[in-house]
Image (cartoon, rainbow, N blue to C red; front, side):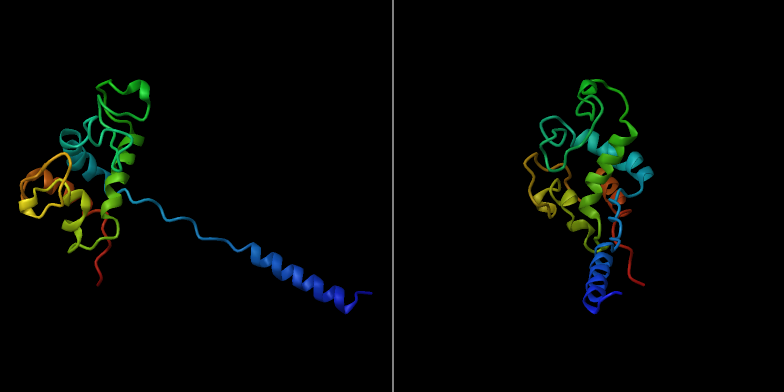
Length: 157
């Protein structure tokens, strides 16, 4: 015969165990934006203007980028001038997308990945590597902005 005390203890143990088995939602996927836009528009700009070994082509930089003939995921391939691997392209896209993720279209031009390389006179935030864009109307600025627009928050209806 089960005693009331044993019954209460059993129920308490079952409740405690059930509380521990709560499924947590899976983590949100990292934003990577539209990879087609990234490869066609943004990656060439990053290669030409940002991914030098003395700047964002260095692993210790907050925005560290892979680039052909420069920084590579496989250090043995560092100085080989061959196309980026799919994983390197995705890593670059995610690194840049992180700056635009969750922004609205009104906030996009305030994104640091766009403001830092912009000339101070055009509203830039100052960049140790100097101004890379004289103004927001430059083709390369617009290429980065077009990619970042693919990762911003959906507009409210």
